[in-house]
Image 1 (tube, rainbow, N blue to C red):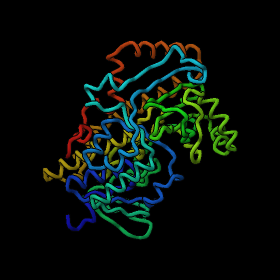
Image 2: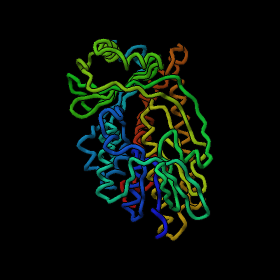
Image 3: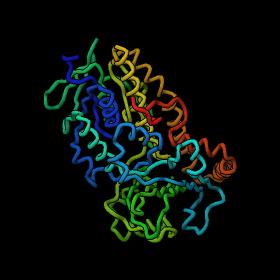
Image 4: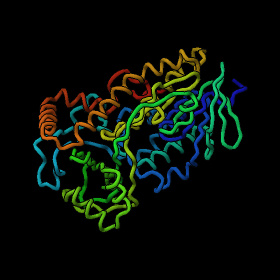
Length: 416
């Protein structure tokens, strides 16, 4: 192994790539992360305005890797989730629609070891916490540095950087997002489509305590979410057409505030915006394969889904746990962990979950982002039925918490 620059080169030091690098380092391997954006820039308030709902199983992974102390001060527990289907948000209409779902962490406390339904974390705080954990673990990170090519040979992959350097490793992981250079160099195509919508994201300060309750309203134009953050703040995510999203982003403060309060309602008092408004295009993009010779894909390079249920990042973190376990076990057995046989284990482990969740999110978008009266009635009756069936609610809560199926050890809170 001495002739290689690393055991595993990870292109992309985002949240999924950083988690994989930390997991490999904790297990005794030598990862090398490469990212075109320096960490200092990634944690700036203007770089990424989003906040992510982290499944409790994925937060267990960060605990097992020693990253939790850097993340917990910024993590808001999600104790309840209220899902409402209506033409207006239930709060501003004065009462909830009769068609709603309520999920409560107390219902699965015996199975989740007292964990909440999940944790809300602003992405910039997650990036900063993982960056510190990587530094503590002595993981080498090249940033800013840009990958421009990758060529797989019989025993290694050569990665070319924009500055002319060439690095080698037995395995390269493409974790650089939807425009993955590694995926393109491996000849892996994608399938998907544009939803012709954007997610409008803003952080607000609330007049009243949110008590750890997340609200999601399914409106004709798309979902509108009020997601609790620390210090009685909330991350607002609402779906609009591309043109309306652009208008909201560029609107004067008073105009944006008027639209916000009309959509938000007054059940938590006045919502005062903090920081800029962000918009993100929404689409579905799935890689046709998760692996190629000496190459594996992770995170949005493998699957970019609609954020309707907050599962995009969680899907990438589950993939990081599965890929890390596959690589580490193969290395301990003396196998070539970049071989097709080993990488197929990772692909087989994640293939069904990735495809089924992506299809489910796409179905949700099409089912709930419209005002068809028959569809409204059908989905409303379905929500009401699930709300009355305790075992069904518990299953959905555990699924959203990432605790269903063949879990990697890290998602069970166990070290590799």
